[in-house]
Image (cartoon, rainbow, N blue to C red; front, top):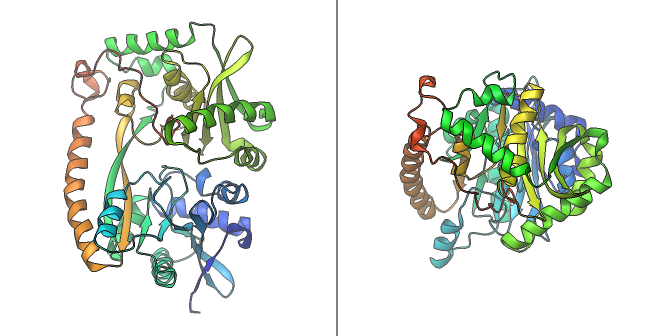
Length: 416
């Protein structure tokens, strides 16, 4: 069989959209996921980040996508970036960087295989249909390691990857890491009330009260997607997003042009949940629609109202998922307050390949201890759901009757 060729490409402009998307769609199934279309690894989404300038050398996200080819045909690809910092990743290695720098090393640049600013699990080794998965993944990893040497990067980080890819990376010598998020699972509910029927009585009443109080000041909610998205919607939403981003971490990661581009390139995959009061939009959340999941991403507001965040980000997402027959809602990173709203802990996976043997040993020791803690915490948290006892969970009375309004996290602005 003809030998594989591996090269790095500085941007998606050099890769045909149909070839990239064929790899991305195939990889989701091959890597063990249930999505047939993960919107975040699509050419449309990633190219919009590049074309808007949200990722570039200037902002410390230089695209260097690793391509594997055979006789000019794309076999596999990995979305890869050369980074000069650790912002916008949500798998935190700041402590590793600080320790290595204090010991006299240079942690940056590093290679990041991920979707920028997006803590959502999806395929990272994108492999074309009909290819040998292990052969292609091994070639991608070999290409990443060669690129690490060429760029004098300290390490390779593959984050929010599918579990099968995580196993592949471990077999190829990567250090393995786990973390957790909170997702809502659709148990074939016919309606939101049907979902509430699965909860303990006190929790059911608390959620109904939150929804009622959120809309009490005369607030109405709109779902906007596809051809109904207009520049006015994007103007309002960007105002919400930029305001919260500026207050939380100084400069928002995404710009207005990015939202304009995704609105043009993938409108059928975008859902804006917009809150209106007295004739004007006052809050909104952006979600992305997969074939089996709804992915909550960013939110913001220009008026503060109790429980409006929960209504716009969590409950409206559940409403939409039930209506569309989607299997789950992924509401982003962080947020144990999501437990009280019917979201459960789910493990996230990342893999790390560190060139310096001394740093690698130190990180490996840390990850072994961290993994034990994460697994124990996830097991405990899964007993603290609001579901009725007969569903197999521990008593829901262990949760507060109505968890307090959460402080927005930096990623979801807040994470929806």
